[in-house]
Amino acid sequence: MAFKLKKVVIATSVMLSALMLQACNDNEATVKAPQQATVVVKAEKADMKPLEVNVIYLDRRMLPPGAVLNVALEDVSLADALSVTLSTESMDIAGAPPYPVTLNYDANKIKTNHRYNVRATVKVNDKLIMTSTSAMDPFATDAKQPLEVKLDRVAPPQNVAPQANQPTLAGPQWQLVTLSGQAVKPGAGGNNAFIQFDVTTNSVNGFSGCNNFHGALESQTATTLTIGQAASTRKMCMEGMELEQAFLVALPEFASYSINNNTLSIKNNNDNVIATFKIK
Image 1 (cartoon, rainbow, N blue to C red):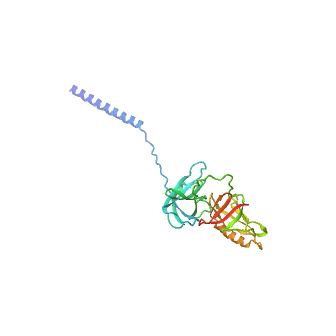
Image 2 (image 1 turned 30 degrees about the vertical axis):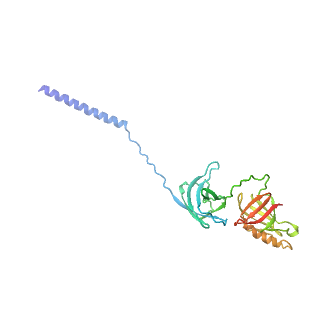
């Protein structure tokens, strides 16, 4: 009987030791595995807004088949880095402008201290034929929708080397030589009609045959230019009045130009030469 009791006592002691060891292990596990803080990262929800754009061009020539228009909203804040495209749309186009395009952009990515631009291009078989040349900030205080973006035709590459000492469009006084294919005579007082371009003030001025005139140089690239309606003095002359009327009417028709052998040739939107000049 005593032997059996001793065995029971021993068995009980073993069980108690096992239970105590398990409890110690559980406490140690609790110490070694503290609770981890749960971090919840919320993704910023995009705030998509539409930007309505109308793309136009003043060149009356029709676009060739297969023309593709691309319009992009770009962040151009960094002068020494590539622009960042925020939204872009491409479409096949045919017929005459305007071409309406909607750019959907995330308003959360627009920053008040950054600069933005809407750029448009037209390509045919991946060859650039037209591009916008003026900066168009859609978030400027005076910007209105639809934003009007104007395209200019890209001049084809020339295979001939540029002439040395070739004059530039801006600076010289260009004397009118022919108008609508006809040689012109001096105006009042034997003075020759001329025009002068100033890119620093985006203006033009000159003598039209009887009166002096001035106007706005609305746009100018390496091959294109647009002149607004000119204003002139109101003097009456015995000579040069007919020349003056024809010259002033022709100014808003200026669309493109080239300078060869010190001769300035001006064409209209139909690619017809409407005036030629030489340095006065």
